[in-house]
Length: 251
Length: 248
Image (tube, rainbow over all chains, first blue to last red; front, side, top):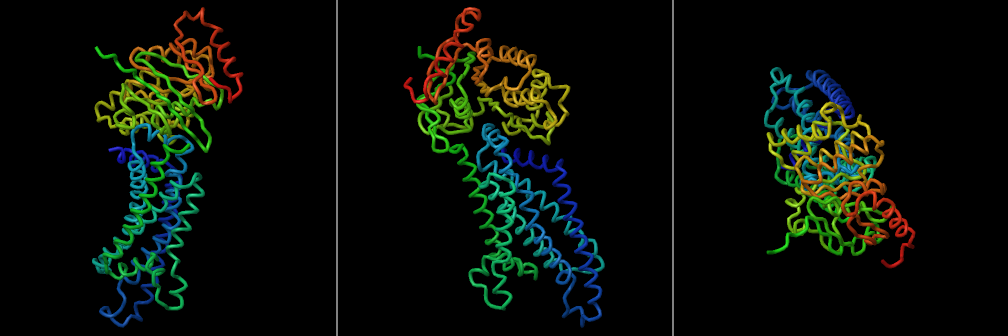
């Protein structure tokens, strides 16, 4: 109950903050531009495609790269939207107010995570609407589209959870955003060197976000990829709960 | 017949913060309907004591009991019996006064109709009806204090914990606050910290003076206001002048 109340408060606060609207506006404008560029490239490539059966379809050529672009954008947006979740609340005594109101560390963390996730998933839903608008003319592979959307949603949740954990562990929102950005970029680029030379990623490859997004973008939802995202989410939130729970022991 | 336990009991409470012992062996109690004033110079441990009572900080040693029950045994239930207003009132600046009270009601788990009734009651009691739709971030300090008090009273707590409630208020607002505390005390116990000895003398039934994290004075203020005026001031000055390490 308290987690829902915390989520409700934070969603309301996000909804009236110019910062969140500005961020959403910039993100959607950038995604709309990316979508137009993707469509344009797809249209130009049409004559060179040998045939519909063997060539890349609409989802391969437009939707998957477009959703990957949204995830790249979320590497920046998620830290910005989560940075004040806990780091900003501590100094203003609002975290203490929640604790005094009877909310546990877990309820506070889950509530704040849920509010930001709803915001980023709403953005994802709007982003996904753009390629859907053309579905009548492009006949997308719905299975592949769904798989790409599931992976994107899980990846966004992972970045949000990392942001919440960084916000729990740092006293300043800017520090939290920087830490979350570094971790996100680290997970995104950890195997970049190996990929460039065409080698096997090994355990570095397993840690990389790309490894777990690529199969879904081709339409393959693997349980190991879902487990990867869930493990990071649970780990990040557990660390945040532990840190917020320890507030009573600290100053 | 067994004696009724005190509404609030602190038993040998100790607490360290940032490697420094802030409270040592603090013990005092509060009966129902009493107003207890916690006095002390800056850094004496008043806010830490109040945060421990409110359940925001955990004591390193000792126990805090509400109606004879240890707060750590049933934290949620017992925290529902406490209303806390810290020195810097925590408000959500993006929410209106009414939304802020609604959020606090939801956090306390008040169901819809009861929450709505409680919000209307506190808006009226604290004269906030006229500013119910103003953003908390746009309120004056006095208004923020009243909203903080409304948040703390929403669930009708048995124990009200107020940290420096008169800080930053003009004389008119301070007089209104005294009047309000006078109205609230018959139904609940109130612990408040203050630097203003006149305020404490005017509204408290009992006073505890903390110095260097220890209780140096704990007595009832049962004489008439005219008789006790000046005595508390002399006691406070004598205690505050002691070196920090002096024994109680």
